[in-house]
Length: 311
Image (cartoon, rainbow, N blue to C red):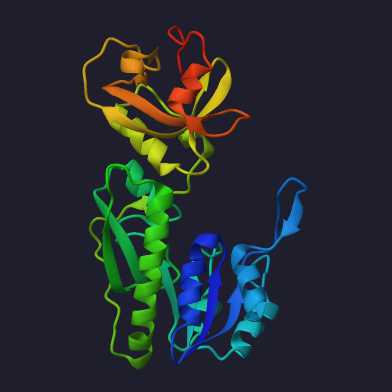
């Protein structure tokens, strides 16, 4: 089985490693996004997937675009591939790319389709308070995550699950599911089923302003916002004119007389009034400083009783 892998961020590396260790299969090429500036010196750095390909000696290309790119298409066609495996690649695949592999382009999508088609299914599932999510192995078509599904696995979302934790688990599960599905897809033993027309939702790209905590919301929604943006880029609020990143906490379903955003030190904890309930901050990161426990932060503040958190 000749496979080309298309992916970019570090979270996709478990899937690539799984393909590299598949019996009777060979990863003959990798496609990733172009190098980006990063770090203190803002040097051009390869994506984690490109670096892994270079380290393994796999032929890799990093086109700026795939549409109307005859050189990139010729490269793909030269690989005489059976499958194009796609995970968080970050570019739209034109029809010419979808049609080139003998058995199509197969995507690992981090949701239970048709729920949460689109760019940010993990974060949207947490923000919506979903009790479970999962991963699908699907056949890509020209629509937005509309192709048929070969296989899926369900994963619960716990009350303390963060996006980072869920993302890691979904990629591990997706890597295993793809490895067991691909041989059966190529042999014709596993067929894809059309997605249901009911229950379709779209996971739109996250906007920066969505990180900002709205204390008029319930404590439960505040908690979901914190978990959806953890560990990075982090949900945030303002304290005395500076950003305060919230890393973890817990919602308390209890009556209170605090104004939304008002801080209380009840029982020695840093608790904030919400539209409904109270949100207890457990760990945070002040602007320009390291992450710390809320208790350590409070010990450095002389009087927080009149502080109001906000955007």
